[in-house]
Image 1: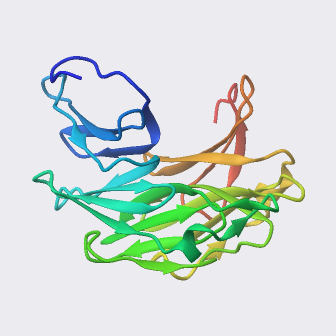
Image 2: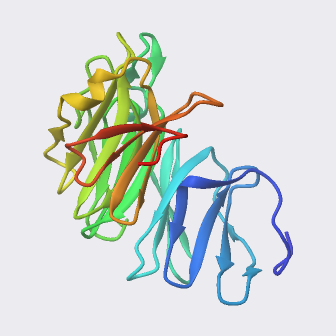
Image 3: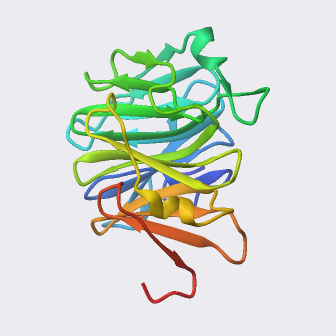
Length: 239
């Protein structure tokens, strides 16, 4: 697209955006680009080209300006503030780890940045972690509980990473949180009180984590300040 005009293609703005104080960055999954919207003058800048891939999430270090975009199949791509891109391949063993439902494969689901750490989540609880601004990465298989759990999204806020998902055997919602992306703690019992609570999306706004299921037309939500204590509410709720 042309700078200053509205972009076209598969622009996504839920968990695959990265924001700063002056701009918002969006992942265009149609043409594998990152597109920047500047708030102050209401314009779109020229896009940042990524290596061809199947991109599903990204996050930004607002201090250095580095963006990490995760290709759900093969690599994480580091985009420096000057536009230079560097791809780090995931190992085959990591990419090919099984997940629920049985027989399917672990897909990249979300990426977050906080406390000097980039953390990429996969559906089977495996993670990619970087503590040097996306230069080097450590792969951990089943870092988060993985037995029968499908993890759907990750966010950072209030000094911690939070992930949400569901138990594949009974469709009850699950959540976990970590301060460093290595040691994980799990939600209280409130999330499991609701059946058909397949949490897929997670947002952090105004000091709260807001998770949502995928029930079109009648969504249910859960909110938490810390990733441990959760409260359910629905679209027509005043909470």
